Image (cartoon, rainbow, N blue to C red; front, top):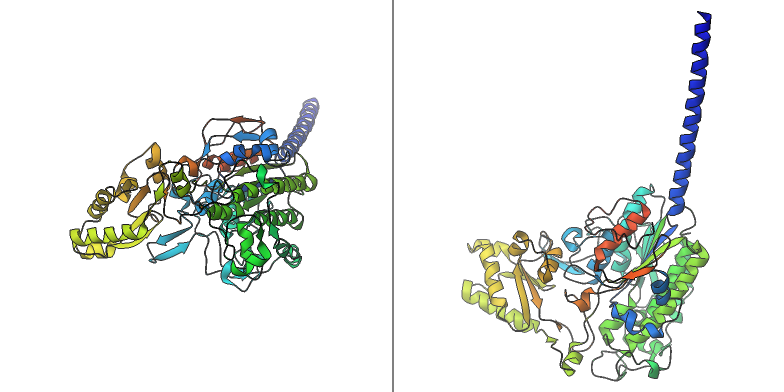
Length: 559
């Protein structure tokens, strides 16, 4: 009996020992796997959006770029050469939101920069929030938040994944360019308030005061240092990739007779909203780069194994493009100077986060059309849409057909919002009124396509402009009738460029990936802006943004 007991104890001892050794081995493997996972994740993800950057700016200005900015991202990263927006309208608010949420306005709800709210019967701003207060200024410029964005960003998902230990900071001259990319859980978003202040500010949505590093940056008078002459970076005669400096297609600044270099920004600032003039010059991007570099130290970004996210939007390219147009010397100089600012930012990331320790992508929120008056001068179909005449024709049509001229409640963003209560009061059928307007508007000159909300709701489009319209159509927020102008026909001044269409000049934008976990190479395979967030999420191993409709670009990520 004793011998049997000894055998049992002996077996139990070795069984426990084996179990202990196994448990230790599993724990060690788990620690190793965790360490490997942490080591495989970048310390910092940097998302860069260059506002209004057409894809062909990369190729047009390539020979003038240095080796450390755009060329470095192209040659040492991955270049998606056929990258497009897949919805209409192509504006700043929807663009930034789609980049970071991985979906379109149909789901994330940011259908424009400003849109008509059908419930409260007034225009609303994509980032506006009067329940919040400004931080860093007494002005109302800080009454902002991301609350109108309905879905998460990849930065939100990273915060959730890291139990809120991974930081997110958003930076842009434009409030919407800082707020929407950073998402709902950001530690902070900062944007530039010009006028007579020239300071970076935020909102009580994030915090109640400015951190010391932002206060110090504002006190350094960095903005004031850029109120100086803006001349071309290189000899203007070498700017052969753009049109003549003196022409009739550019806007310019108040107080200067011609839109030609050089520009005395200190003198011109008095008639051009003070520090706000910097937004419409290349120096606005330089100031943004300065602030982003300061944020690396100020927020201690990328200083541990827990991934942080920094979103940076260079907004001045948009202001310059709107003012001077796609083919201007001012646009070319802005991109050549931005190339230098990108190099400074990359060098700072290398020094402060470490080479090979961060992942970066660069894209744009939309492109821009060549100035239509310029296109007309070289015999390319283009033109301007007369909004006042359009409004008059519609009111006349509705008066004749229904005996009422007050059936339209709002017209904005190429959409018509009908007065539904008035239609019901008159005993009219809403869908019939929608289709009557479609049939009328399609007969007008400079109109290419017209669709009703009913058609958007009930028809599944899988190609063409129709698919893009549907991807931008949000059932609760969009209008009753959607209007598409002819190619290169815009509602705008006859100087400068704008955007918003589903044509290639507005949808085709750069997409460059660079850094940790990124393959080297390029592709002409068609990619979409909505693929960026899922790709970054896949790289990080986090959940995709909750409304994401894009797919990870497997060929971009290293195996």
